[in-house]
Each structure stands twice: as structure tokens, then as C-alpha cells.
Image (tube, rainbow, N blue to C red; front, top):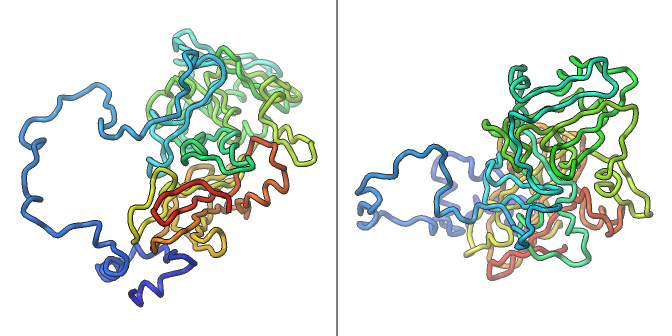
Length: 429
């Protein structure tokens, strides 16, 4: 083993300094390649590499009005899709393929979806947004009218409050990063600040809350404190530069950065200003935080710091001993992620990962760390720390606070067990 690599090990079971891949020149790459097999990922130049492939010998496809992913990228898809012939009727969800994505932005076509009675087919010309209740002047907006207002953009994650809920179970749930944690996505949302519209309507000083209602068949609705609305809420019209997809609220949705996903009401049609919460069915029958002593924290809105390793992870297995990059995502409804630490020995030792910029408040942050896998068993974990000092908790700590009967706001540390044959599974450490 190279002395240089030995010096770069910063935590147990082969975790290397986060700067290993950032060094200039071939010195470290040569040392790593010789010591741990990185050179085995490439091949010397051979005669066959200069053969002109078939796809270079003929003209390519013509232009398309709206392009689709390559036919070879079939793994990059939402799922699992329920097999029921009644799919789309009643509540349901499909998850983002976290283990097959990179960076911080989720493509529109694989953004996770949660609906309570299917996706409505809304004609934007007939859609209206009503603002009423405790206001001086009730207002109705068409999509065309909203499009004339000054817009702003926010890069923000949206996460279902029930994401990762299966992690409370007594035994480790089988699944991938997608099936266990895929009810989270991050996008650039563009629209009109809701505070601007409320100021135009004239908010009565007695109004402390509003209720937002969607145009879906479930009339999904949630109460929101007025302070959050005046801070950073948007009536979002665009997602990653194009009109919001139907599954994510077309033609408009509410965006409340960092708060429970269901509060970001899709297909937004009505906002009513109130003195107190509306106590709708969607905020009394579910989405409340069950505590250990049997009590319920009903209005616990922000989503605390959380992270998950996406590579390697179940379904994205190891192939042979050598150098790998551990990669994953972290996010917090409290603000920016300031640090992510990674362990390869089940939490006995930790190394700080590199954060890929830009690191934005209430957005997904990508983290990376070099790992020299020896070919032996390992338990990979990550823990996120946000700008408030909040540290992502262990499973033992979170269940100690809430018990195991909860299903919302699950942000405990995930453990991926790596077997000697390279297979990765969800385990409890």
C-alpha cells in the first residue's frame, strides 16, 4: 500500500480524505491506481479502440419537438407503479430514482409524486385562484394574470412527510434508496411570491393563518401560518424552466420551502385568510407527528436535516475491491447543510465528505467521499448537520424520542451493509 494513501486514510475501514480526487497531477491517481485498482477501470490504448462504430457511419435522428431520455436509460424511472387497474383513484405515490441520479436537481419527468385522488386534467384557461377571507379586497387570478406579475425563482427540495416511514419498522425493510427514501426531489421553482398577492388583497391584522386548497378531487387542503407565507412562499408556475408538470400541480402550486410536502398544495385554487388553523381532514387525520408517550405534535412543519448514501446502495452494488466514490444527498428544512460525515464501520468512526456546490438553503446538497474498499464487510452511513447545529439522529435516538409507531418525519441515519461479494442491503447498525 502506498504511504501517500496510508496518510490519506481519515477514518476506519478505508475512508480517505475528501480532497483525494481534487488533487492536480497524476501523482495521487497513479498511487491510488497502483494501490487499490483504480487503473483497472481503464485500459491501455489498443487497435480496436480506434475502430469507427456503426452509429458514426450514418446520419443521426431528426429533430424532435420535445426530447426524451436515451432508450438505454430505462433504469431512470419513477416507481414503483402500483399494479392495480384503479391506479390514480384514491391516494398514492411514486418515488424518484435517487440511486440513478446525480447532482442536486431532479429532472421533471422523475420528480416524485404524491396525490390524494389522482391527477386532475385542468384546462389552464378555466383555472382560477381565489384569495378571500380576512382580506380587504377578495381577488381572483387567472393564469394569464399571474404570469404578468414579477416572478422569482427558488431552488428547493420538496419531501413527503411520510418519506422513509418504513425505517421505523422493527426489522430492516428491504428496498433501494428509491423505494425507502424516494419521496423527495429538488427543483428550481419559479413563480409569484404569495406575499405580493396578499399585500394586494390587503391582509386583515387579525389573520394569523391561511388555508390553501387544491383543485383535485380530494380538495387537498392545509393550514399555513401567515409568517411562513410572508417569508418565502411562492405560487409556483414553472418547474426547472418549464410549466409545472400535471403530476406536480399544473397549472400552479403552492411552494413552502423546507416544510412538509403535502403543505405545498398542488393544483392551487383557493387561499382563505383565517384567525386560526382550519383543522382540515388532511391535517387532523394524518401528517401529525406521533410522540412516544402517545401525544401528537399536530403542527410540526419543517423537515429536519437528513441524508442518504445513493452510491453504493442496494441495487448499486460493489464489483471488486478498489477505490470508489461514496456519493449521496443531504437536505434540511432548517436552512443550509454545513457538513456531512460518512462512516464505513457502522458509526464507529466518521470522515467529513466534500459538499458539491452550490450549497443552498432548503435545497438538496450532493456530498462525496473517496473510499478504498478492501473487499471485506462494511456498514456505510451518512449524517447531515445543518446551519442551526442540528445533527441527523441515529435510529436508536429517534425511536427513543418517538417510539416505533410513528410514520412521519423520519430522518434517522440509514445503514447500508456491504457484503464480501459486493452486495449492498439495508441493515440496522
